[in-house]
Length: 193
Length: 258
Image 1 (cartoon, rainbow over the protein chains, first blue to last red):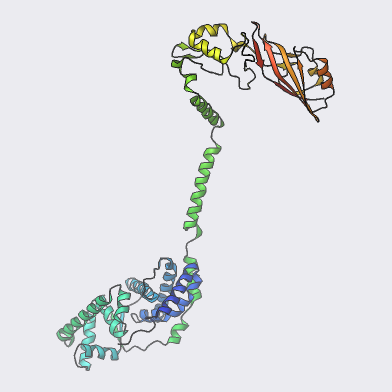
Image 2 (image 1 turned 45 degrees about the vertical axis):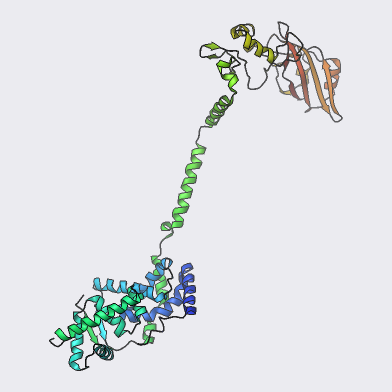
């Protein structure tokens, strides 16, 4: 699975990013390069989980505002700045769901579904696709998150670990368990609905 | 959160459309509105705190009783006094400023009055003269004889030993006062038997001696030649008490007024 090149930086890019962060800590206007670089990523992450484009823009702006307000607390831990922004985005997103400003939405591509069905060692058909969608509805929220990050957004386990604040290995284990659960659901209730 | 909606094959958003929604200026404006006002910042609390402490400390010193320091100084002087002076067991001198004999644990000790302006200090001038009291003699007497005897014979506290000319102890003086016929006198029965007149002019110092309390002619001539504002010194003034003892008195210093 190809990795996200925007997230996975070279050492030089990380250092340049650190310079921007340092400048942003001294002067909030120094945050602009970080805003320009990550706005689209964060917007896509948010819009992937909801249906309202305008609301997605609002929440994205809210994420950057929060990041600017808390930039002094940011500590570099060898991972891209994006992981910190993703964590803020996740928090803001779920807050909007709790406040009922937005509806939780899972956006699925047929291409991605077929890849999942392959991984589950099943044959792709209209029935299997429906069964898989039914199985997704039955998953817990953290399991849906894992499916979205890994199979719909094609993120590496490293990136998933950074966003969910778990280790890379833990992300692998969790992803495997979710697939096993989906397999089980797929066979038990998938075809029934 | 299972009331989730599932969208299948929703059209992707174009990058240009996303970038069209970017507005860093708006975020910046919101940031400035949300940022903490100065009175909530650590700088404010730090500055205000330091200023408050400064005011408290400054106020404490400013409103302190000015006599407090004098009292402290007096206490310190008393505490700094050598033990042989104030301890009655040593049977030595106790000093107070009133000139009255000090009572320490029902034991009377010799008291020598101390005047703040040092104008009543008795200084022996001739160690060989039997009539002059030396410190050693006083110490010997105080050690050998009962102190009450010495006190009864030497009542220094009633004496005003400050020399003066026409009632003036120091400061500005007119020629008329200076040439007053009474000469140098004291407020007690001590009569002046010797003094020196020291004059300083452009050629150096000049000293005149006289074995009485009156200015002699040479002195009068020298004083007449002085100009206004010059300083006149009377040094080495010796007096004789009614019982014949010679004492050295404080020097005098005047500035010629006319």
